[in-house]
Length: 261
Image (cartoon, rainbow, N blue to C red; front, side, top):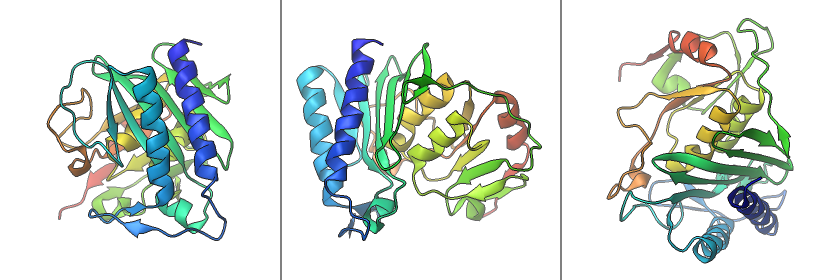
């Protein structure tokens, strides 16, 4: 394991512990931001914890964070993309599907990724060219059958409002975009559909999917990588479809149609 991967793993774990200090099964107070997404004090504290560690250890790198830095001054060099608390609504309601997502983008694409879900004690990690891992064990893609009757599809709750999805898979909505990517990577879900995911929702999951042997496609007009300067990333969404294999992805794309608005 490289020193950089050790750092991002350790940072994800320590951030998870920070978040657990605020989590309660009966929920905590939450507010709405201007874009109508949810925020809690835990989001802010986790963001401060992550950004401080990155600035100390990688002072030359830039940071994109959902809770603090939404634009880049330059698209050169390495850039950290972080979601301090993915699944904030779940967190605020005492629902256990939430976590932290951290990625380092270099030469235009993610090279390091860690996503940690403390209530499940699941740490997903990946480094470009070396594979994806769950709690230190390499994720093995088992190339599932498309017609297996128990196959599951994870999707956002509003997916059917924007797309006709003619796939024979059981649909589940978890409420954490980062965890949807990980569910596909480890083989629990055969496919995932994200409609309004932003860059911090997908950066780590992108690499974890790729390094697990899976595949994904961004179906909007704008592609997430390479990152670009002077864009407010809070205003940009990246609709995506991810699958356990390229074959399953191509099969699924033939059965997903954008609805006329």
